Image (cartoon, rainbow, N blue to C red; front, side, top):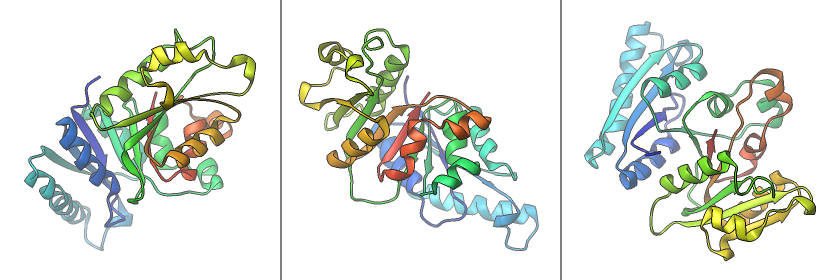
Length: 266
């Protein structure tokens, strides 16, 4: 998979756009184009009619895009009107054939995540493309990446999900100066992966291969924090409805406990 087209979800409620800042860096490194997308509704209206509000936001997106164009990047913009901007962002990603979707992510409480549909969860559950949730802040190393794989003994050599995860990860972080760490967790010793097989699968040196026993959520957070990684890349299962609310997966459980960017890959 090549990363040639990014969709950046513009936050119409904020002057700060961490996702766009991150896309600017990645697009320059990967020679990718950027489609800057905003979905607005009555809440963003300043008293004018719909046409006037849309026109005002088109001007705002163009102003945000111009510095990137000045850097030589190919940037297009789009503004739509809908009360269901969660779904519209997913559709925009599909319509633009995005290889990666970037969205700024801000902390939510556990109850907010479980009982209220947030745009983060909608994207990571429903978007076919990998989704990067970008956190604000500068105190992290963007060239240090942690990839969490399924390292269960019976899965290491033949797991298609791991193969997809590693293939996408390698292309997304295809730069000489990136320090890649791989974490594999198991809840019991009897299901620990074979280190040699996992090393062959991932291709990372032994000192960057981390095998741990315990709760996956806690282990991911502990290692990401100790390494001060800039990005966590992790597989994500696609669910909706009650099942999703009650059995939310690892990336959703660690999302608000980490300060680094997260990439969710189906």
